[in-house]
Length: 212
Image 1 (cartoon, rainbow, N blue to C red):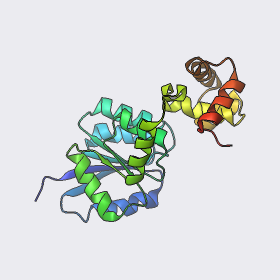
Image 2: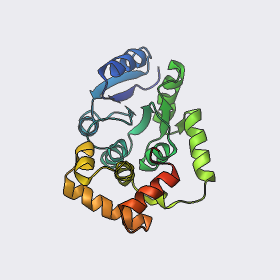
Image 3: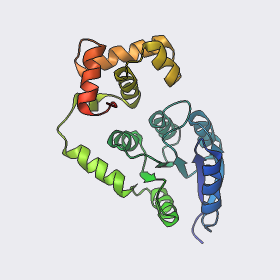
Image 4: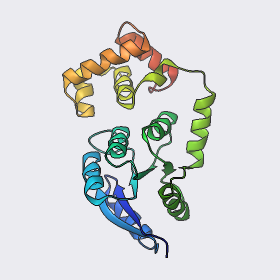
């Protein structure tokens, strides 16, 4: 039998983790060693349980998935991250891979695809869902945009700003302080090269990263 792959499941839905555990532990070379419902817990588990692969959702409470991936790779570079989520927006795929994820799989994938993806990323080989591949190709073909210079957190702030939310509302939605949000807004305006929130919002709508 192949060497055992130690897996950490990071998803805020217990029923998803339960289903993943049941599926993965049917494989003779896989064992789920820990579960986490948010980014900070996942990071602690990485340090304590030293998993080989983390199956990570992009939408969890606390730190953003991109921040969690970056922290995981800093703490344990040899641990591979397989994003397993419901969305494949080009910015999400790009940010996850840039942060250090080795694979990106959507939750509509077949069970056999998930199992193969875990084995592939454990071996250090990239694995992308077909939709994620298309998004990356489309992004690579697009002309460079000012928005591409934003971090994942700055992009989240811009989207909420474009929805007309105040700094206090953005802070509440992202779990940050109003002062921290004010700093992010300043960074966003500077990177986009715009003078105020209105111009930033117009640019966000033009680039298609904010809802109409």
